[in-house]
Structure formats: C-alpha cells, structure tokens
Length: 319
Image (cartoon, rainbow, N blue to C red; front, side, top):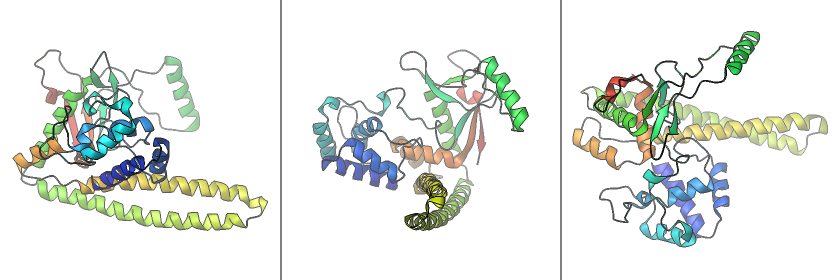
C-alpha cells in the first residue's frame, strides 16, 4: 500500500542512517503507524518485516520475483543485513515465529467467528507448523458465574462465552475465503457494488480527517492553557490533554487503515488479472480487500475426512 510503503522506506532510511531500532519504532508509534494486524510495531516485528525477502521483490532463495511489488531495494536489504548479521538467514514471511505471523482474518476488518457460540476466532498453533483458527477455550466455571452476576448487578449485556469447539486450519480457511471473495468480485454487478463500498469508505475518511483537525486544535488549546494554568486546574487539564492525545492516536490508526482500503485497486471483473493481483499482493492489500468485502466469516462444524470441502463449513456475511 502506498502509505505503508512510504513509512517502511522511511524506517529503512533511518536505520541505514544510524538510528536505533528502538528509536525508529518509537517514531512509528508517535506517527500512529501500526502493523497490518492493527498492532503497535516492535523492534522484533520491524526487523523481521524489513528483512523479509519479499519486501525487496525476492524469493526465499534470493531470486527476483517477476511482477512482485518492491518496497525496499535489494541493496537496501543488503545494507540492513550488514547492520544485523545475526539475521543473515532471515526467513521469509511464511516462516515467521508463530506469535509474529499475521493472518488475513486475525485483526482489524473481517473477523472469523465461531458458528456455534459466536465468539471471535483466534489463531493458535497445534504442533509444529499447524496454525489454526479456533474458538478460544471456555473460561473456568467460576469466572462464568462471576461474569453473569456482575452483568446482572451492573445492567451490562452478557456476551456468549467461547465454547472452544470450532477449529479450522488457517491456510484452509483463508484459501476458501479468498476463493469466495475473488468469485464475488467477478460477478457482473461487482464493479458498481465495489465502487459504492469505496465511496462509503472515502466519506468515512473525510469525516475522520475533520475530526482529526478538531482534535489537534483541542490539543493545542489545552497545551496553551496548561502553560499558565493555576494548580487547581492543572490536573483536569492534564487529563484532558491525555484524552485528546489518545483520541488523536486512535483516529490516525483508523485513518491509515481506511486509506489502505481505498488504495486497494484490484482489476474487478477480470478473472486472470484479479487472480494475478491476489497472488502478488502484499498481506496488507489482501486484508484491506477482504475487510472491504466481508463483515464476518462464520466457521461451522465439519465432517471429518481428507476430502471435506472447506466451503461447506463457512458462511460469509458480505458488506
């Protein structure tokens, strides 16, 4: 995505110019940049991301990938490897550590949902190299009783507890979802519907930009008032400043995510071009496209066996 490309290139330039990883991550956090899963950047995730060969348009063996988008040049990647020789054999995205791998349905946007209890699915690893979307284990009985009691006493609505009974291999689920999304984008009316969805997103972007401008003015006013405020009002103004800063960070994060969605430009209605686009697109582009098309993916129980059709297990609620 253009915005993501810009800040990852800037991060690379800062590292090659001598900035520490901690300083670069701190800058990214201050600017509101987050990972494609919507999480704050860490030094570990930043290093793995920038050293991923695909970011330089390379395969796992260093061969150029025809038509692959290039975020940093192979020379820049070599410079980063020289700074971090301990990562000279840095694995590609497909071999990231389990807790650092990012998945299409596991963050902001389209979410997997248990078809039995309605709880959100999480990615977990069962054994070596077997990532799965699963319904989380149910909480202890005592916690469930406490939750019910607390909800009744406070008047809160009680969400369904996870049942822990649904699991589906992550690549199997994501491939099935991708097939249905691409099929939906090949329907005759897809282009008009896709443009209408983009129009809604653009309207939300403008609303958030207006809100961001108002928040920045509020923050400046609070900072100005703090400089001459008496002790009796400083505590309240300090809290107001923290609230405005948090509002600004949340707004920037949401804006950047929506701008990623708008920047997605797959060839809707063109089968060969659409499949080629999907195969070459970075994860952030795939996530943005799926989030634009889908509200939720419900995963239902399935029959056992190697020949089970994954499409029989999923229900998609479209935007």
